[in-house]
Amino acid sequence: MGSALTVNFRHAPRSGALESAARDLGHRLQSLFGRITACHIVMEGKPDANGEVHEYAVKIHVSAPGAQIHADSIQLSGAGHPDARTALHAAFENAKRQLNAFKRLHSTRIPA
Image (cartoon, rainbow, N blue to C red; front, side, top):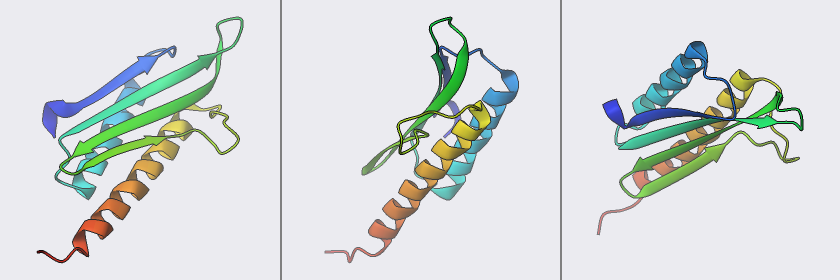
C-alpha cells in the first residue's frame, strides 16, 4: 500500500502517537487483505459550543479491486467516543469485519 495510506485530522489536535497508531492499523488492514490500493483514515473531533473536543469519530475508507469499504466508529446511538483511541479501534474493527465479509464472499464464488 505504501503512499496510499493517509491520515487526516479534522477539528482535532494532531497527535504523533495517534497518527502512528492509525498508520499501524492501516498496515494491519493491508496485511489482512493485500489487494488494498488506498486507505484513508480521518480522525474527527466534535467540538462543543466552546470549541473544546469531548467526542471523537473516526472514518476509514478502503479501496480495493471490486470493493469500496466505508467504516466508522459512530455508535448505534449516533454518539462518538470520549477517547480518540477508542474511536480509532472501533472504526478499525468495523473495517476489518467488512473486509473479512468481502473476502468470504469472493472466495466462495465459482469461476465462470
